[in-house]
Every structure is written in structure tokens, then in C-alpha cells.
Image (tube, rainbow, N blue to C red; front, side, top):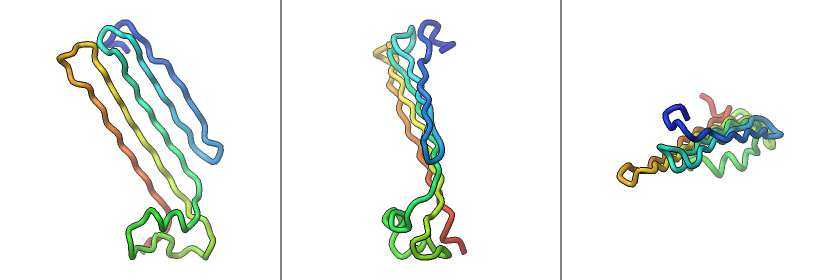
Length: 107
């Protein structure tokens, strides 16, 4: 926003009822960027063992140590950004970063 000198970011924050939340920020019609956006999500909670097993490689028991039917705690976050400069000779930039973690399967 400071570099652009014209446009300002519009912000939208949200809260996840079961834990966590996120923020989206978008800049439009600036001097440097036609459009730019950044999104961040951080969520946590618990999930059924069946969902964890479906997302795990074969032969790995990530729910080891939990009783049958007991939910598994998780943490997940994601960060993404897209920037479209006004200058047609400058490239558009885009990236995503995702992270997912569970408690369980520890040895």
C-alpha cells in the first residue's frame, strides 16, 4: 500500500466457530498494482479418525494411541497471495503455502 501510493487494502476478517479464523486483504486500481490480494487462514479443532486415515499415506497409523471413535486434534493454516501489476511487462505473482498437523501417531 505504501509502495503503491494510491490504493489502500480493504480487509475482511472472519472467525471459525469451532476454532481459528482468518483475514483477506485486497488492493484494487492502484498506481503499481491493478489488483493484489493476501489471504491467511488459521484453524484448529478435532476430526474423526476416519477423516485422518483418508488423508494419510497407506500403512501409517496417525491415530495410534487414541481409543476407537475418539476425535483427533488438528491445526491447519494457509497463506496465499496474488499480485497483478499494471505494467504489462511485469509478471503476475502467485503463491500458496499450506500446513496441516495432528496430534497422534507418535512414537
